[in-house]
Image (tube, rainbow, N blue to C red; front, top):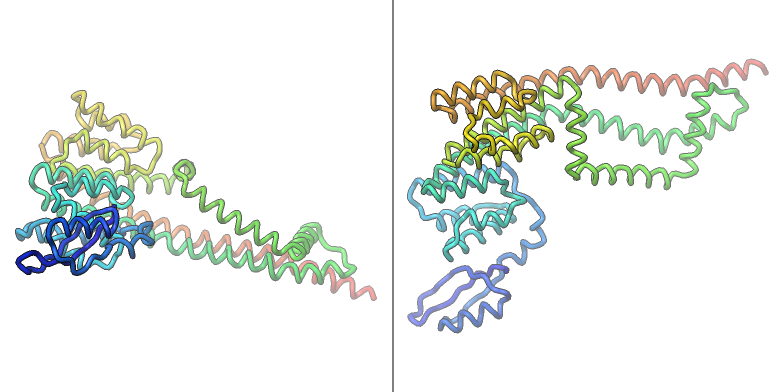
Length: 402
């Protein structure tokens, strides 16, 4: 049901402002009048936000929210008041709507984790599990402090990956755009000129020219096919099976395979360390960590880790079964952490190490991609020039006969 904010006066003439959940404004009005209030204003909170409900909350915004909330809770501020302060300052309308809902439901006696569970698109299982653990242990301020650090490190890792991939993506996009312009607008005009001349053309040149002539005669159809392929590709990419297939393909490339493994190990170590620090049982931790893995095979295998630990096995013994994905140094480090009783600290240090490795390997991969892309562009441009210059030489040779 939607939320409404209202201003009323009680029988003593005191002004009261609050939030209420109801089916519609008439329901709010009847409820307030039944309590003897003089109604001043009633306003639906989410009416302007409903059109934006499909939008999301970025990792950086969630990290800032967790940081501010942890600070306010440590200062002794009640949870509803702290959320109200953050809600008034936030500019993300989706987050503002969520915070309105949280503040209202908490005042009605519900837990924060139960309210956040309604927004699973924006708050993943790690977030929900840590909030619930903090509520149960009475250390919710520490849970939000850990979450802020976890989200910040995740954000930095994602930004490193995006930054490293930006150059290749821009180059490939520019190549694609140039190819489409040449294919749809330039090639058909050149084809009409060369095919009308009585000059013998090489087979490759004739094929390109006839293709250009066909595109010129069916420009709308070709553009429609290209746009359709882009839409189909985008839709397929949103399907989990397609992304798993892409991951499997890249796992066969040595350099990218190592990078994906390092990203998974860093995420697994960071998340497990944060959950354990929050007091979450290790079986629950492992179940949550399994869902954040990128490799489909490892994700399937990781879902069994919790069951094996529940049977009495050590985590290091369980992970040996996934030794193809987890390097031996990771297994030995976890084993040492279990023996010393400092597993959380060891996992955090390992996460930091692999995050640095990811950063280093991304830079190395980018430096390798730059000359390869330049070589591909050079070959493509050279092939096009040869194909286009050959008929010109043929034309000049034909003119010499006259």
